[in-house]
Image (cartoon, rainbow, N blue to C red; front, side, top):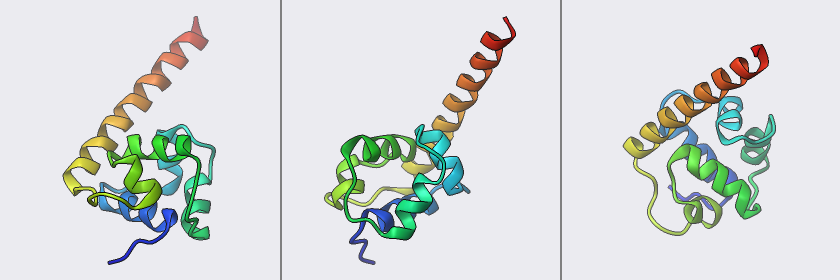
Amino acid sequence: MLLPTLGERLRYARLLGPKLSARELDRLAGRPANSCRQTETRCQSTANPSFALAYAQALGVEAAWLLMGTGPRPARAAVVAAVEAARRRYERQQRMAERKAAA
C-alpha cells in the first residue's frame, strides 16, 4: 500500500494503534482541534516539522516517516505503546491542572 501524502500516513498510523479518534490524537499531540482531521482529508503532502514531531511522538512513529514517508513503516506494537503512554501523560497533566486550579 502506497502512502504518498502526509495525510495518508497520519491516518494509517492513527488507525494502526488502539481505537483513537482524530480529535483525541489532537489532544494527545497538543495540537488544535481538527488539525488531524483536516490533514487527513486534505491529503497534505507537507507540513512544518513541529507539526510532524508532535504527532510522531504521540503515535510512536519516526517524524521523518510521517513527514516525508522515508524509512520503515511503524509497527503496531510501537504505536499501541506510544498511544497508551500519551494517554497516561495527558491524564496526568489534566489532574495536575485540576489540582492547581483548586488550590
